[in-house]
Image 1: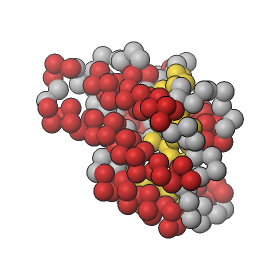
Image 2: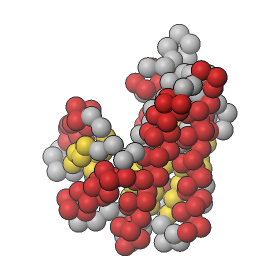
Image 3: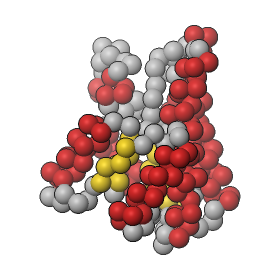
Length: 207
């Protein structure tokens, strides 16, 4: 697998965790890219194929959010939110589709958000951007019959991103989803074990 992101330190940390859990130092490769840039998205695909010989699955799991009411958004902030949450996944998909068509069972999994369906106050623009990742799965279903595509829309997940915008006093851990629960849904989509129809979204409510 290839771990892609903008920060080497974070990617290296995750790669180290994978090696520790599996004992396989070659299982995860690291590639620095901002897929909001179409050129970097294509380079990500090239790197993956050169490293592993093929690209079989694409998981768009990046996200950027801040609690900002719609009326307080500046144009620059709106662009930033959409670049990370909408443009990046679309660029990655466009770059990956030729390789996914050639894969025996090419698949795209987009991690959306409950905010795309019922935005928490301050997450309206974030939710609008994430909604695009669900719509694009329907487009893949209609345009690319050989490629499966799914979206996962979890509620609050206990992650550093969540805690950067919401305190535990305001949202206790008991009211959040375990990241492993979301990961299991993603794995089921990749492996074909899901009961979702291609193009569909799995909405995962918080406890």
